[in-house]
Amino acid sequence: MNKISVGVGPHPKPWPTDIKYDTELLANGDTFNVIDKYRYWKIDAIKADLDKSRVPLHIAVENWQHDFNIGTIVRSANAFNIEAVHIIGKKHWNRRGAMVTDRYMNIINHQTVDEFAELMKNDKRQIIAVDILPGAVNISETELPEKSVLVFGGEGPGLSEEMQKSAEKIVMIEQFGSTRSVNVGVAAGIAMYAWMQQNVLKK
Image 1 (cartoon, rainbow, N blue to C red):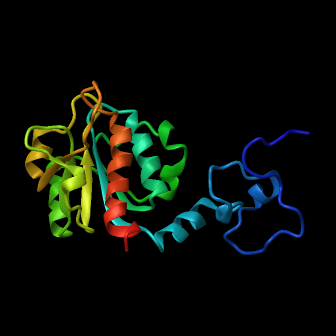
Image 2 (cartoon, rainbow, N blue to C red):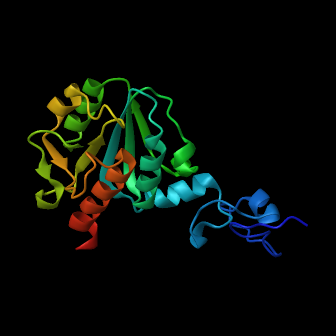
Image 3 (cartoon, rainbow, N blue to C red):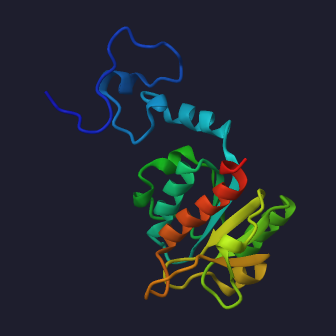
């Protein structure tokens, strides 16, 4: 008999009959990385339920070099139940770090920065770039509006000049060690949490 080290085994009978449940998972066990509430649920059912309570924050990532960190950023966006993730540039991105969480997210692709910026303008959403650049202000001292989109560049090249010009403000995460910057996937998680502190956790 095979042992399941992650998740739960087959559901004891009688099985629940609600259409949100996946009969294959009920029969074979659920090893997906989900909270207990969503055990044995279909992916579409989980996404639909998350859509009911998403926070209004959006996240955007420039994908010019097929950055492996995008998966990590998407996984963090799922953890905070972000409303949407925008991928700017190459449509295909490295999903390995997402650990399947991209299936539960609203992901929007844009071919160009202009296309992305125009959509944000029409949505009346403030573009806030996150990078260590001249003129950037400390994120801890900056108001992060409820209706905003936090934008991240690729690991190494950072934000494109075009994106920097499209941003209404540029913020940086304060650092105290010897390294020039933190990994962009880590930075995204910190920035999302900073937004959560201002707009969700203190309410």
